[in-house]
Length: 206
Image (cartoon, rainbow, N blue to C red; front, side):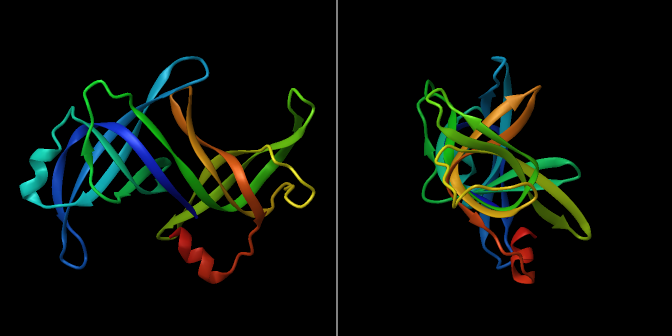
């Protein structure tokens, strides 16, 4: 399970459409993009699929090319190897000034399993920290997909150390990075602990 609370300034890149949810309530969806800088100074666009309150009469508020400021809950989903970042807004979507810098920031709530490599490192002041990747699973029908997040725990204690292939629950600060045009999620750990899997928690990933 991965859930994020995000704030962003983004550019609308696909026009808004009216849709209806299973309860018969109308809402609007549109796609925005945010350039993410890689360590090699290249850029790749992060695309967010946004849903917000409104109907056809509000479509004119979301033209292609407009920069908007939004916040809400983001849930990444993976399907056929591609990750989709779905955002449901909280509050109003505001128009940003044309020169506003595009950005995304937020927090991440993660439940999943660490990979086969946990690095034991030290910073410039010789303070120990851990760096590792962990995956969360989502299912579409019988097909399982894995979303990986890279974590860094700079507040390392004996109580919150992790090991390889351990089930963990983590909260922290969310960051995006680009590598060879791929968008990846990073997280600076704030809290970390064991996660006990059971059948009810499996449904959180579906």
